[in-house]
Length: 400
Image (tube, rainbow, N blue to C red):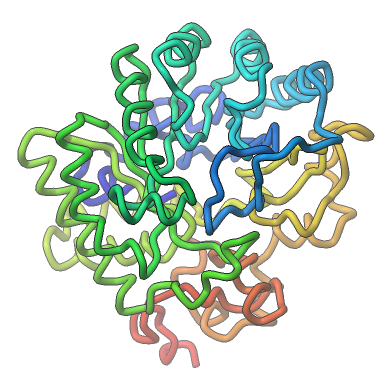
């Protein structure tokens, strides 16, 4: 994650992370990206079933009954292991997690073990009664996916009325005092809705938004043609920075993040070098703390059937299953070549990539998204095709 509001608008200073010691177990959620121990935030896709049919769903979910999902007891055993391992956050996802009846029980169990519990939902099922349940659980955060304004979102979600239901779900959460945020996956078909999304956030007093870059996984692998060009990505980041700053100046300091493309960090830095060199120096320190892409290090995934993945987009590769071995054992077993490579990827990328091998921002970015490189080039250690930095910006010719 790249904190646009933190980096560009200065809502968090380097000392904020340092005063917590930068241990993931002690850091508040909004500073976890700066932890130095990088205990994994674990996404548990607790159920595959979903009431929507989103065109970019990495889980390829349908509204049908699925078999072989972890039981409630197996879920508690997973949570016990994660808590003992030191994973600071468990993110309940799907499918649609609210469709799983034991979500409240499992989320409260995670809270009782000292973990922060978060859910990622389409929001359409959060009526007033469910919002009260979520409040009782003590969730740290509810992330609701919207991929545009009404017409755009409903096309993406495969259900007319999905936008209105999701918006009401967020309103119900806000009424209960739950921290809620919007999740938006950027592509050619919805990028023009971003200004209206900022207007919506301010109007509804929604305090957080995450803009996700497209990852080519699941149904999303069919949307490569709808990926932004490099120039469009740059313009979109400029727009996000402009709108974030304008909202802050109007007295609405929303938290704005971009996700799944770590070249956003250097891009923010380049802009600040021109506008505020002193602030740029602080941003550089924060980017060094961030350490770039954390797949296989600070983010992990457990699927509905118990399979362990490097993150939620690596569903085609499993390191093992929590029904047979604990997550903590699987996660620390570097006898697996891919797990070992993800944790120590620099030499592998330097040997296989071109731009990444010559990039002076490698330690800031950590090679970006390996699953995108694999999807386009058939090589996990190739360049990430979504990196939009120019050769001049990465220092290509300096190291050629």
